Image (cartoon, rainbow, N blue to C red; front, top):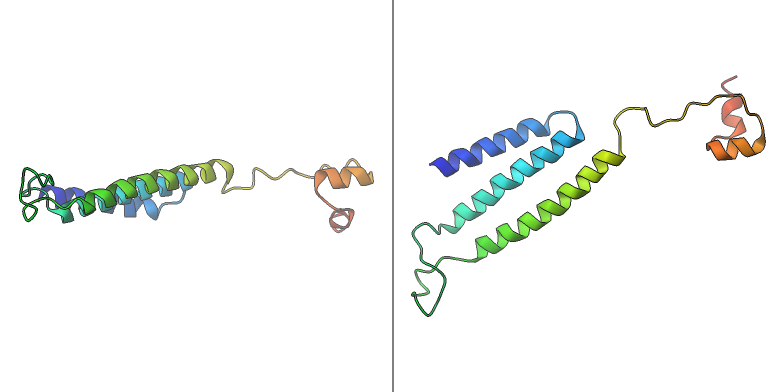
Length: 127
């Protein structure tokens, strides 16, 4: 019962953060949701009343299934890679227009237009 409540709280918190604005909150929400899914996968393995998967000591019929544990291990690695990628996108990308360089309009030489990334035709329409 406690594990089900924990999965529900993690999922609810992840969904709440997912609908918020901001890339870092989306990254945190995907982390919470992935933890909830990992706990759900481990809960599906039902290793609470099973014994260790060692064939020389226990009967294979009562041994725990190692497949959910392998799924969770793979999911942890994938979640780490996605988190690093999304955090790098959050650092590089911005939601506002502060990264645009304003046009000063003082230099009219052709070389300055190419260096600024603008064309003379673009600036003529503004004047």
